[in-house]
Amino acid sequence: MNIFVINSGSSSIKYQLISMPEAKVICTGMVDRIGLEGAKLEYRAFLDSGEVGKVLELPIPDHATGLQEVAKLLTDPAVGVISDPDQVHVVGHRVVHGGERFSKTQLITEEAKAKILELFPLAPLHNPANYLGIEVAERIFTQAKQVAVFDTAFHQTMPEVAFRMAIPNEFYTNHGIRAYGFHGTSHKYVSEQAMEFFGKRTSKIITIHLGNGCSMAAVRDGKCIDSSMGLGPMNGLIMGTRTGDIDQSVIFHLVNQLGYSLDEVNTILNKKSGMLGLTGFSDMRDIRKLYDQKEKAAILAYDMYAYHIKKFIGSFAAVLNGLDAIVFTAGVGENDGLTRKLVCQNMDFLGIRLDEAKNETRQKGLHEINTVDSPVKILVIPTNEELEIARQCFGLVG
Image 1 (cartoon, one colour):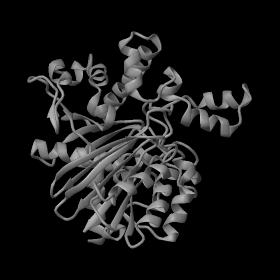
Image 2: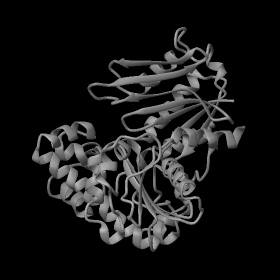
Image 3: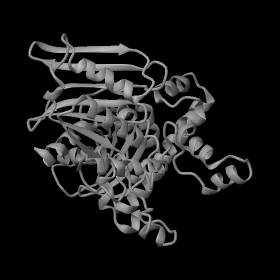
Image 4: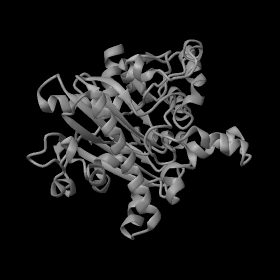
């Protein structure tokens, strides 16, 4: 069964064509920096004649354009892996917010699409992109079953004490206002990889997903018991364009004292804040260049970014009542040694001791970057949300 996985982020699309159940990757790639300068499409295919690849640098103003360009490559006479879109049997979609309506993987029907549409306000940077991916895929892969895998599903094991908010009860019972957690597919995948590495099912792990969007999860024995994100994917850590945690009084001040509308405040907090607001750039690769040039704004932004991660490590270690490992994953977590260094500095009291040489050495796959005597393992684990999505799709329709 050929499963084409579409993982639409706020400024990127990761994709893989995977043959299940053997989990053989047929092609893989990424559309990066959507809507930004320097956008590009990476494509790698694994043919009988060997591996082929392409990198296209072209304007990619939106997700629809990116997916259409990917579809062209899939059936390209020279580098394509299928001759006809009908050779894709299932399209698996990452959908960020499932609310309380979707707690597990779901076949996409018109009714399901309508419910996903209703959840746009809870994930304004992601659910529209996810929904668009569904609509484009329906037009391209007309014979395939469309399946949604929800970021919020992994966090459904959070206890009520963690997901409830201290507001009048009717807002939860009547409107479902609570913490949901996000990046669940990634947190699930890397926490399971860490447990396999330990060779045991009992564990206390903090997973740290750092990309354009950032989140953390406290995972006990493979189950999420707390998350840094809440009702929507805006709070918690500082992100590419999102504020992370913020004093609610700021919102009232912007509206009542400075005259901004609620829509304008929403745009500011979701799309103009975070690292973009602090430095003028949302991509950590750009900010790292400024940091290396000793740009004060970039240094402060990096320090704030790491500081918020450290605070969540401390609180989650308390919730877990101990700690076996912290896991860095996703684009920044896997590739930016500076972020890992700043996060792990002065954390000896928790048993977190970074080996700086290991941290700066590029390695593939799961690897440790802690010192030999560190009581807590520090792991870098490449996330594979696409494989996890394919597994869940196959489990549903295979």
